[in-house]
Image 1 (cartoon, one colour):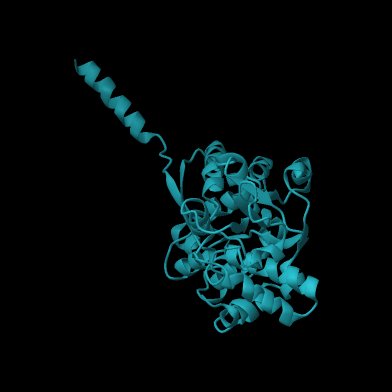
Image 2 (cartoon, rainbow, N blue to C red):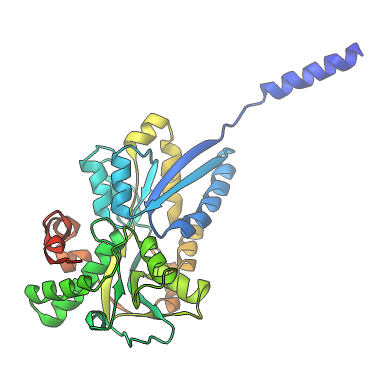
Length: 331
């Protein structure tokens, strides 16, 4: 009996002496329509990280309108990383909270944007309003659904896509201003984020056409509900980069920098890049994009630099308080 107790005691002591690998957590604060993407990406990274370090990781997600999410981080939401759809929301974390290093763009390849998208249209099956391009969105019998450009990167890209089309077609800024004003005058509900706008269009049945990111449109029209919706690709649209950044001030306090940098860095792995294509996002990897190019409709894509002189100028001119959007928008 004594020998058995001694053996049991030695086993317990041996188990207690084994190194304990603690489980750690990481919070990814992201924009509204990336829930499904990161639900698929996170297990890939968890498996990779466990194989590399032996450590288990719990990845938590927070989603909403991109600018609203940036505001939440500034106000205290403890994001280890942010994965946004426009650089101004990350720049806000640099300028308003000192949370992110000013050189964040140079920390990862492709100016820290692992994939990109654009704005296209989702219409009801059969396209009953015969919507083919931006001009059709301001017809008297058409009700477009677009999220609020003040709170949503999705909404800003839609605004700039419309501005790009009108300024090139009509050749004068006042004509573009008039066109975009007519467009937003027809929007019945300004949701704060892209997924809210999708809910308004799909679940509440409001509107004739939804303007949103290409990946959201194709997800609905080809996988979730193909019998009820069609995709319309406009002749021209805006190129939407999706930048990412480590929230330096938070990871240094929490001791999660290595994990956060690895989590974002793995977005450029071949496995992750192929996952983006699966989700109808345009991978930064030219090789993987070319392999999947057939699933993306041909479209002339213009950059924010070409359309508005860069994000800083676009924000100041169009989306700041008393900017062009505030001047032209009427409910």
